Image (cartoon, rainbow, N blue to C red; front, side, top):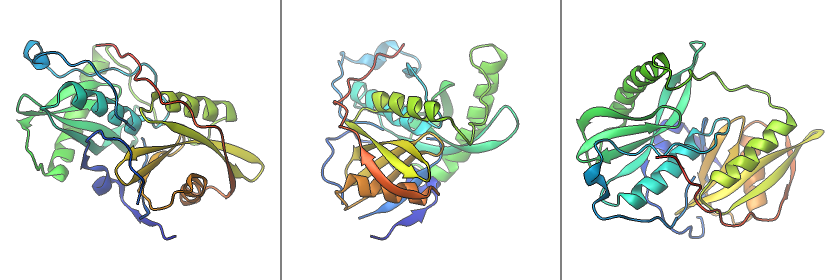
Length: 269
């Protein structure tokens, strides 16, 4: 099996369309360093956008390290279910941390009543102040979204509505690794399975799920969410390949029993 690695920017930009997960098909690994959805039952109301001036942010009930990709896809899953006339996809930008460092960051790009908006895991929704397009220039919108996100985040921090984000730690304790993977498995709106990767004298938990179409995904708190188009049906082998590509000295993989299909957790409006 051959793995082709691409940069996260191009691969992260795709229209998100919730659908039942069919069998996956060829392996192209895409690493999304910050970081995933499934078909959910949602209550639709008649013309739900008519009473709203801004799109809902659906704040997360919990957060995990490098979980922005998971948060964005979870948001898109609910948003597109409740507003089927709108469009949405993930968008990768650079985010500035409180210490001045920058890192790759995934947000949701959506249409809202003809305008382009974005939604961030911690800073909520903000307008791009341009028309929504059916085939947007994502490189141009990414640069625009970076500027708008930084300005929006600074406003929220200055007014006490949010805290400045710090750079995630590079090394995690075994307890924090397990806590974040377990929490992520509950947040991911797909049936998720936890795998343990043997690396030297330790075992590392990772969450495996199928986002739909031809894709698989693996969440690791240190690196975020890796997604791939994959023909391999051996989930343990896929996790082993992903862990190796992430730089772990992966020697073997064991799986826990699959977690039950999760129910979308309630979010504050």
